[in-house]
View 1 (cartoon, one colour):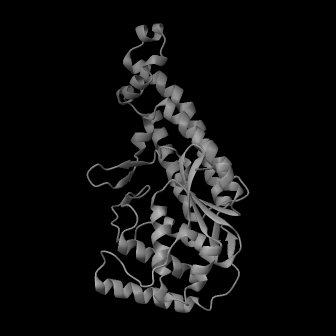
View 2 (cartoon, rainbow, N blue to C red):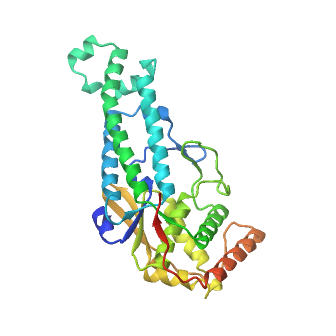
View 3 (tube, rainbow, N blue to C red):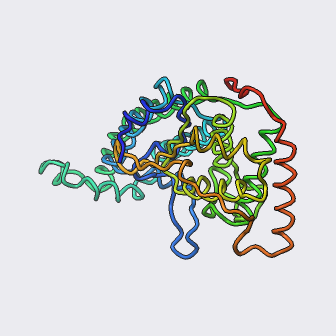
Length: 328
């Protein structure tokens, strides 16, 4: 385990994923039948208990400190994901405030029953208790939304954008492998919540762009780079993707990828609880001699092999400083 303080200290650039905001990650609900992740509805956020609202406030306060540090950066897509999360909480708040029937809030009353004194228990009816809880939670929601909005503005101000066709090609290669091999969990994404399969080319690509940005910084600068997240998909992306595109059969064209990732590795920090993280580094990756994809048919495998081969041949003469500029 490594502390957040040490994570911030040992990186020149720490790319922050918005999943790092929450210890329990209130955004998602897991479908017990399919295992897919679903964005929590505004109705869910309208019924958060006082304790959980307080915990979310504290998480956003910690996150604000993380992204306000000198090393912390992100990409524009992460900032927009957090903005979408903020909007879902805001809709939950509006539903709480504007609900015509307080019966739906009885669950909150049950959660905080012990907070009522004997007099309140005797003289207040269930809907009056619900109204009291609602009014008490309104202030917590307002404080939470202020903190969330501050985090969104901080992320947007610290977002970096790499403007380069070769970077876009790298993102495309990572996305192709992810969709073909099915590395990431199936997710119904923020706000629109359409159904995505692992092979769907229209699925969100924020994770792949964050990983590609980390690779790019490793390849074209001497800055120590890490990723902070609570999304287990990054373990798969950072362990499997380099081993595939770094395979020996693409050498020496991919040496500008393999050598930097060993000398200046991308570090992954998975936030386990509170201020503690697990660490993984690309310096530990073993590159196979041959290119191979499990559970992918031979024709598709040949197509992907050719795509990666052409990408590295075009990339081999690519020698320049990393092109990073602040978004917005």
